[in-house]
Length: 214
Image (cartoon, rainbow, N blue to C red; front, top):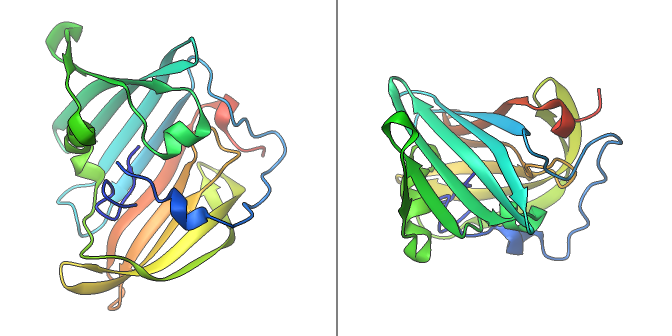
């Protein structure tokens, strides 16, 4: 899943990993799997003023072979749906950094067509329903251990908080990485100075194998 800050040039296509430099990530709950297995899935919900309708994003592992993971992705917004398959390295860093080697769009009756992905442009276009843009660079970065809701449980994560500008409005962003959670990405929220929620990400469901211990 791509992150925000022009989630692509920022921070669901390029990494915000540099913001974690020198930071000790929070310990994770016992019983949480940091590995993906065939059949594992996660469901994210995106909402806020940035979108006309909430977006549901479902990702599921369909194959693991030779250090590569194949993930079936479905994004739903109202009556619209996008369906594609992405293949990339099977590692936590690859998932966090949106490293994808192959993309196949899925059409009617399951027909698949491979798409070129120069500079992650195709990946960004597919994920555009969940991306919120920021103007310029973020300021006032703070990184600290935090606890986040993953489905119906809570897990120790690391939160990156910053001040950004979105459509000429100052917003405070709060994004989390949960290293013991196989999908890596935890909840996130951008809130304007007037209290308006611009962009919110919730982890609403995940497979038992990748769920935090309850």
